[in-house]
Image 1 (tube, helix red, strand yellow):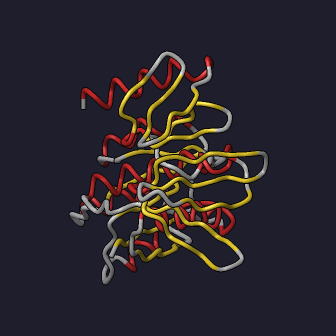
Image 2 (cartoon, rainbow, N blue to C red):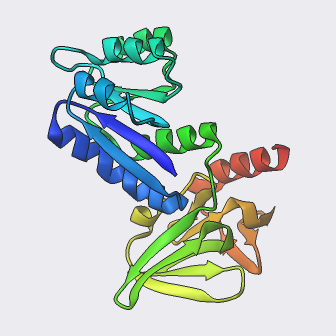
Length: 234
């Protein structure tokens, strides 16, 4: 189980971090615990008996600030993966002294939080099968991303096209769907978002993904070609 800490002296900032973290962890299919700390002092005291895998640590806190807190953690030989959060980019360079893994700037951008979290999880070797969580009136479904060929929209309806030939329909916006997906899902048209891992060929104006031939818009063509070339070389 993944143990994650959020240390910030502002409750609203802890919540602003926790919500996108939980969304991403559920998508990753990770079992997790999130601990919140309202000061560097309370964090240090708790870590006498608890251990964390990842820590989101605010630099600008009252009394014991984040940088001094990090130095104490390192003196205690804590191997926690440290991610600083701050309103001032100038503080970021000090993170090298305490072997910070990454940093996030305030005000938060959900995509940035989730991207850094995913990188941290991979660094720890915890990455498991990823899922797309679909909420419908009938209930919540967790669909393995590896089984999804593409998302295709028709007006307000989106179809999830699966490897086994089935599809799932729901109402939403393709732009919003794309925000919750890893970067190997790539937009190729205003109506289509494909899983690059299932793309087998690019034609002049089309993309072959599983049994489907999707149109590729001119504005998306270059990004698709670059992403497909990187996949072939990896």
